[in-house]
Image (cartoon, rainbow, N blue to C red; front, side, top):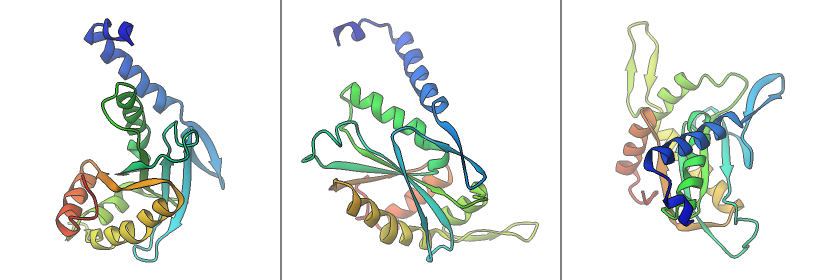
Length: 196
């Protein structure tokens, strides 16, 4: 550990960048039902169809390295939106920050759209925006946040808490862009559902 502290800051940044890129590039391309997809090492995938939202989801779950070694441990859970884009980089960040003793070990759950044609951009705007907006071309965006929040509360959280050893006293939600807006919406509408 003392040798790591002697590395100049500019090289630490390069090393961190290398690990983030390694995690992204190590995702293995697979074929599932004739559709291209990605498999991230050490990650479990749960496919769920929601009657509340009318959508299919892939729930990505990464367990910390001690999960199978210490069966009495429980872990906080970080739920992230846009798992299809952010899961691998957040996973790498958690690993690195835990190794540097900046954060505790945790379970990472990525929420992403599933199905044979996920259409992530359209579906995430519908799911994450609380109000509807009619676009100039006549299409409707947004308005699905109440149903999406209910699905997370009644579908995803119980799935995770009934299948994994979680510390239910600490649960966090994260997202960026529309996902960040949905995170703020969740904080206002369900202030006790997540701790952070």
